[in-house]
Length: 189
Length: 189
DNA sequence: CAAAGCATGTAAATAGTTACATGATTTA
DNA sequence: TAAATCATGTAACTATTTACATGCTTTG
Image (cartoon, rainbow over all chains, first blue to last red; front, side, top):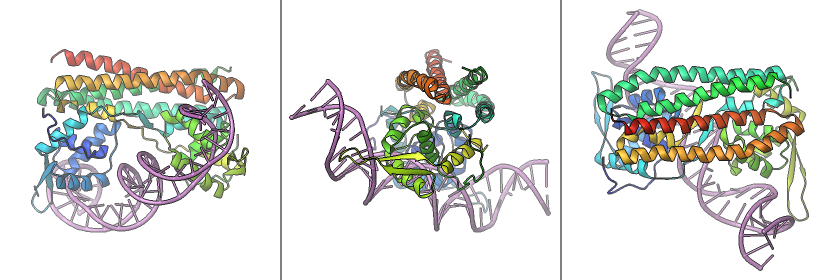
């Protein structure tokens, strides 16, 4: 675990740390990062393809990652790895106790908040949509549980599996909340 | 409850619906909207002041809100209300069953995911920071519980109080998850 | 051989934040 | 009378998404 000797303070966007972190966990190409994000951190932070490739170049320019050509036959391919600088920067970010306001961006919950603007049936529909959305997310997260556990066994990286639990807990809570809200809605005041 | 006769499909940004919804719930000025967001929907969707004022003008241009001068002495002040068009647009958006992927943007959880990049102590610090953050949010949401209940009694708008519960449930779940993760971390594999 | 997946990228547009700028009114 | 709160806004910047564009390789 590197200490933060030369901790770059240029505070990169969060997406940059997602890339650094994923490279550390074994991703090699931009495509790998994209897949990894989609299956795991997507719950905590989404990034799109259009961010990944430019950011990788930027990070290379800053010396935080090292790229090399890893083309496969005629298919072009760039493989990256964290540089020592990159590891230091990632660790320094993790240790930095910056204010981190919890931020959800969820249209389903947002719509629920304004549910009084439609009739009772449409209001109930909002609740049930929110629940089925959480059920789907829950299924997706549970599928990741196995692979995450394996990663923990094989590489000793325990945090991905542990934080997956947090995601699972959130959606279980949302499903329970939906049930409760529904019950109250059918009971008139 | 209006039906969506002339449902504007120009699909506005989510922030626009937040404004429409808040006006419907009684906010009058941009400042009111800002305060309302900070105390309630902030959990589901954040918007900043710099978005509110330009959006209000835009919405006025589209005929979805109606503004009038409501200056108080020499203090300038614009008061807005939903137009009928605006109510229709809001209701149509609520009824529209668009894909709504759950999206969290949370550096605390994100850092937790990459916690293996630092030592055991720093890793535990990530868990405890995430927990205290959720405890603070929980306190804030619980403070809103009273006012939300009153709103429900006085105006019949029940959804704000109900969806507040979802927010409370989420943070309770995250606190429980943090406890569990911590327990596992101190137990070596 | 078609479809799915691998792989990389750009352009244009939209969305959102931060910082600044201003000044009035109410409350302690 | 100082501090807090009310109130509105702009400029500059940063972040992010959507849509497009390309073409290879593996699998069914």
